[in-house]
Length: 188
Image 1 (cartoon, one colour):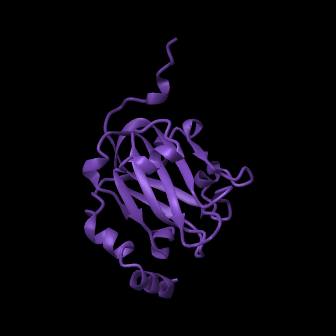
Image 2: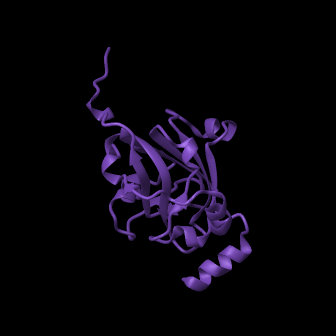
């Protein structure tokens, strides 16, 4: 693994080292925001029905999200509370199906594939195999993710496979307010 990580960093200058150098360190006091994700409101476009997005939250690397017709995936994450995000942890395979480029959008509802190609993302992540390890965190530009209620991840491309795979996803940051968004009822 260490050799793969070192080789990836040398082969992809836009990868882990560049992202870690450009983004500020994860602030002290950040927590895993897994309990604040409203899993019933999360969804994914272009997922293989045999490998759905719900596998991302199982904590088992043998279960994974897989794209269906091509390498692109659009994963929407809804939070119960307003959060300030500082980092994302991606867990994926050590092969060509691991995500390479991910566009991150904050507070954008109902995005489709045509939308994400036209809109400017809050941040574009260029990942390496080292970023796919379970203990790795990819830092975000905190100033762009201060009051987040939802996040959309557009997995634009992988490392050359026909499909993309992701087996884990964690978010780190802080809650901003004690408002539980899932307690609001729809009117009308």
